[in-house]
Length: 319
Image (cartoon, rainbow, N blue to C red; front, side, top):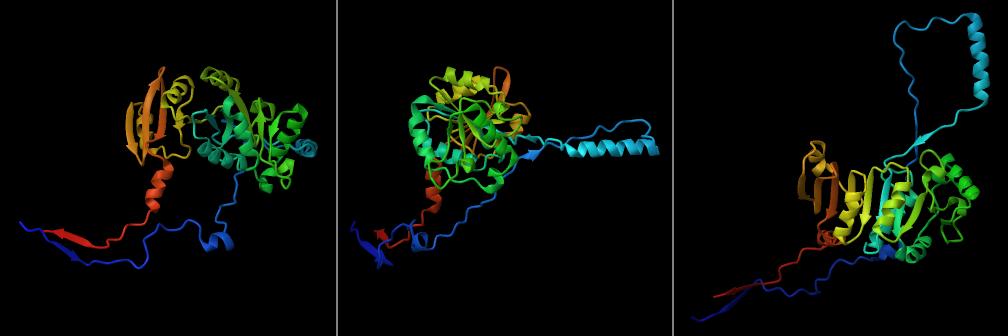
């Protein structure tokens, strides 16, 4: 049988098809900042008055009202101290086999917005990464927003840091004042700086998993979730089994927990893949836990979404 090639709609593009450029003219000469500059502030604890049952209070007499007014004036001269509450503090554990670039990306957000929900409050860092971590961190710290730098909580923390002479990591830039720089504090727990949120991140270094567990046990703060950065999932699951928390995010940070929520609430074992994440609901030592980790790289998935479709240049038919 004779074979013949028929070419239909043969098109030779005038210019080769190249991927869309990441750096454009506007990027260099007219760069717009689309970043949301708003930050979160700590929430004050509101005291709820007890609703007493039975008969209502009797109307005060004139003498009683006089003494009450005197007491009110004395009380007003000494304002009551406002207390604040934590907003879902998170523990981060960065191991030497973890992705330091991704971990630092999310850590920087917590440093510049420390009162935000799910912000990192404590970092456990493997000792072999300390020098690289500090060198990379100091150059990336920018000045805090005035709402945070001038907040009474942050000012109280700064004064206690000076009293304790704690070792800290602050911005190395001369344009960033020390009292307005994001701060990490070595080898101290948050209870040394206040009863509620402090506006800083405490840092502890460890050598082995056993050391990390002992360091975490000394931190009295009740974390609502843990973000573990270790590409060796076996070692990460060992931490999951030994830590007494409920939500564990392995090599990720912002994750929608709705796909595994019903199984966790119903106290059921479950495993599923949704939106490129692997979800598990399981028990360790009779304690229900949720474990989430990505099944593909985040940047690889993003690149697929941004890749332009390939145009069809010609059709070839073989007869």
